[in-house]
Image 1: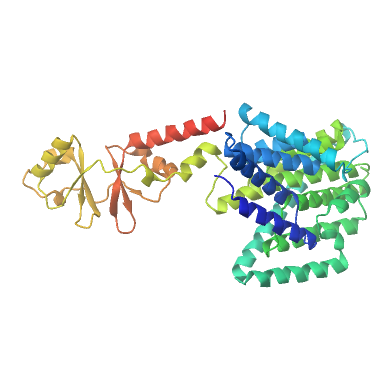
Image 2: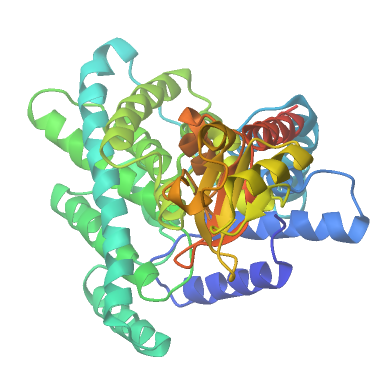
Length: 466
């Protein structure tokens, strides 16, 4: 499915307005959306013979690459969070886009990265236990943040107020917060750099953590447009700084930078669902093997906590709310999007329920079928007939007396995945497809139809993932 270019441009402008208004929203989500939109636009304008998912991946990789000066992380993010698979055919264009974007950003802007790290990381042996414990906390904080985002979105839906009213409420809250803790507002890049390098006082960082979670959830839930990746980075760095100070109080100093980086990557990985990409962001920011290993450990632990208590990511839960389940792979997702009505056909024998057994047997013999369906004058399903029961019955008997009034059936709006599950124990020739609640007969599907649909979708998935 191609992205709508006008919607992508409009969302980018809305994100710019939100960021310019100092709302607590992220920049990388809109940047990724804009990159995906630019990829879609390039495919249309240049008539590129590349899959839509690949050009979207190219745009996303370029956005992450230029935003973080991290082309490797951009390539991995595109495969991990967007394509959801790794393929040789997609690697070349996506990697090229990321490299070119990093080169262009460096040539035209040459902006020093605000998160550049010069400190040397602690050894993994000394940091192992504190980081493992911190990973549990990072996962729990990510869960709290994601639940907070969902709560304020649902609260706005329950209030059912006009958009201008909910945005006005958010603006008032932003103004109020700016009077007391302005560091919690805006993109938070400078504050993030400050936490990574100086950590700040325990009271300040803890207050910043709590306020950032609440104000970001309210801004996004009440109408401001933006992403959650940047806030996730700041929230993670803040909880990492808090934990570092707590460990220092019990005789484990020197973990400030390590835990801030690990928290930054861990919370973002749980929220966005891209653990490898966030680890490589840390690697490319720090060029430190020690910091990267510490981050890897924290991300693994936090992912275990978050995935078991919440789900794969905040975005996956949003998709799940819309009936899109990506947890079991592209194949099952494609089956869940295909409808059984697309496979229904009219190659079946129908008869009124007052027909005689002899008449129906004659029709079945002429059609070469073993089953018939009794339909009303309106075309509604009344029952199903099997040749086995017809042969045993009195030939002058009305078929209404022997028909199965509750046969296995499929609803016209069911998806193919549900249909295959329903038909898993079916024995017979065909399954009727009906509209509910009228029971109007739409057509029939056979086990062969379902099996063919499954094989076709699997073949399409394999073609995409080559």
